Image (tube, rainbow, N blue to C red; front, side, top):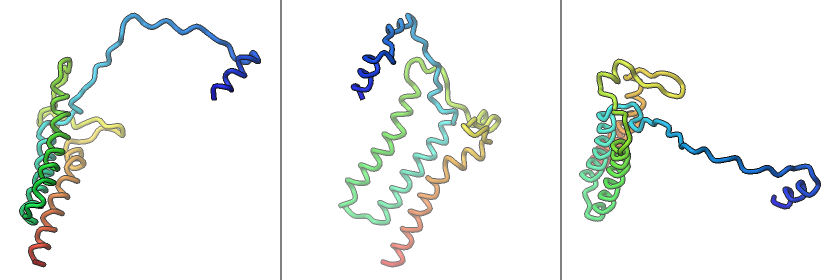
Length: 145
């Protein structure tokens, strides 16, 4: 790739220009680190994921599963705990929406505004289905055993 550039410079087809001066002031973009969703929805998601682990642990109570379950729980807690800490960093002027604000305004997405009910269904469908699936597997395992 670099030989192409040298060839163009040598033939006179390209020109070398000076580097533009760097701006003196750095522009900071105000960012919303809360994603516009209430904390209760994240808590419900974490609750569903941990609920699945509890169902799996009780259905297949085996000492060999203790370490993997603890690791999975740690990943879930870290996966939601680190962003929770991120929202509380210095310089974050935004606050998460309350359930009332969320119910009134909904949330703006890339494809348009979603009502609170629709956003809640989209956010919680996978965690709830995971809990239902875990319960179904536990029932099947209990019936078969």
